[in-house]
Length: 73
Image 1 (cartoon, rainbow, N blue to C red):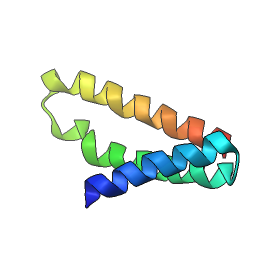
Image 2: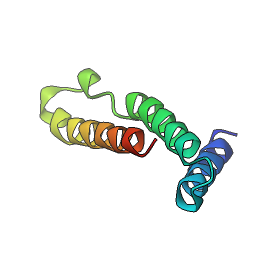
Image 3: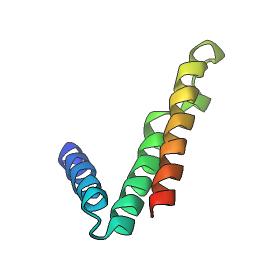
C-alpha cells in the first residue's frame, strides 16, 4: 500500500508540475512527501558518528529539494 501511494504521489505530483495545471498543488504535495520521507528514512542522529556523514548528506540534499518545491509552489 505504501509503495502504491508513493508511486501515485511521485507521478501525479510531477504531472501537475510539468503540465502547469495546479502546479502549486503538485509542488506542495511533493514537498510534503519529500519532507516526511526524509525524516523517516534519513535519521542520521540515531547512527554512530562513523556512519553519519553519508546519511546527513542525503538528509540535507532532500531538504534542498523541499526548498526547490516550495519555490515552485
